[in-house]
Image 1 (tube, rainbow, N blue to C red):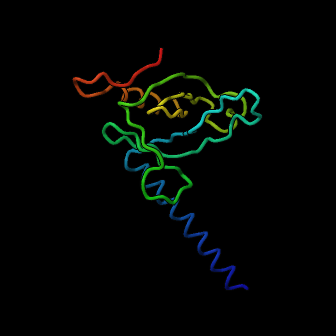
Image 2: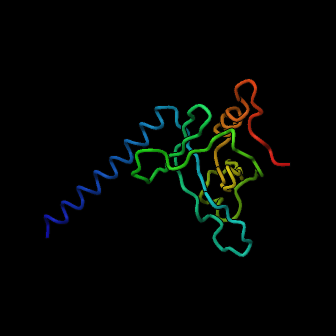
Length: 148
């Protein structure tokens, strides 16, 4: 019994070590802290508006923002956002239960990418870099679309 518990503890420690190593590697490679929610809470009767947020690391790769979920063992990105397909619908501050989950100075961007709604939350410095990346399209392209 002690051997089984020891093996399980070793596997858990190796898993946590891998996640920590992965985060450090992503951050050293130019990553930024980004929260992402794939299906924003649009139901006003929903009790927990903080549900669905996941913490991760975003990395810019040309026209794509690759997002790596912090608690995932997946080798590649969990989500990829193409800036040529990105449409910003709304920008707001965290509200309700999100205040306890997201950083207090974070901004939440409600976006649409190829018909899929998602929300991205980030701090002020990361937001400035994100908006600059969106606007820095190559010549001849119109860049991101802002919903009217």
